[in-house]
Image 1 (cartoon, helix red, strand yellow):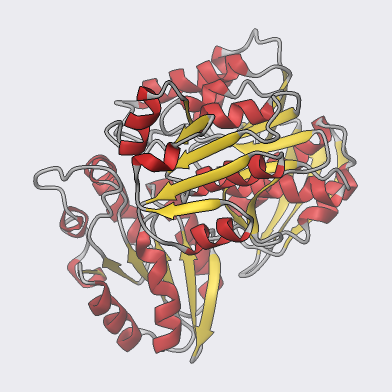
Image 2 (cartoon, rainbow, N blue to C red):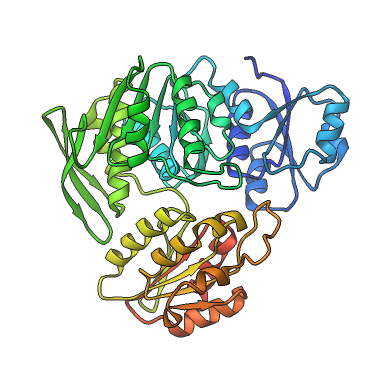
Length: 453
């Protein structure tokens, strides 16, 4: 598709996925405009790249545009969408727009309930280290490059494939990674069988090769169902008989290491400057896919040794008076467990104090028991009120439901953000880790805690 001179307007341009697509389209020559409800640093960044970005929505914003891209968070009643439909302007969803950018590229989609952003980021950095300059679109900014998207000079396009609304089946990638499969996005999927079915549909859209983790029960279920697939399938994991085996694992407070063995041949030691067993698995997925794409495994491993992480993925926001403040996006019980295990190792003899903001009423209702179990791994948890995202409240569902399932001495239910900051600052001592956790606006507390300490 020729994007040169095409006038494209994004409704809800400030989202991480939307802003990334806008950047790539602009780099390909499109004249990009957009709107969002609130002013953010993301909007300023897009303006600095030459895009026309409005705060607030107005039908006049879509005058004389050729194409409209909408965020899934935008209502059908939005005045810009109403005007576009009335004028006969083509309207695409985020995934549809991204799928058009993939045409003519060697596309790789990274899917899974957890680890998508980090694995997509790792594959991008690893390929960059091989001099391949891939295009990429990721749900968070890469700390190595300071951006969430890039139009590269190479033939490879790496994308994070979000399964939350099922739209990732439109990508039809040349290759894909599946990190794991669990129940999530319960606002759209009623049970695990629905999620399993969706990933089966996704696999049927892949053209050539699949990299998948056999440590994960959901991935093993999927492999049994696609046993007669014509795809080239490459497995990775820490047990069983994967194609790429991780063993001799070392988990340090700030780093992690493992030996990689590919089909009986020792590739060497993978060394990461970020902690966590889950990150070793994410890195293995990236190396396996890079190998499938023809990149030398030695160069891929060297590139990942310099990977510093993605924004809001166990991101150290600062330290003061011996207290380290870390921010993380984890918002599913499995993610909470992995993050707290990593934080516990990081803290050593110190304590782990967590400020958790549940994300969506539906997720809290379904996983309240599991959240309580995993949060008990912290020395103390401060529970903020639920971040609703686009949901309406569910009667009787508040963060208090999680608190009621935890030991009274281990949890403080405090909906007020200023009060939480004050209580954490009063409690934290040298050697402790303070973790702001969740997919909402809890991340805004981390710099305030560092400043006020």
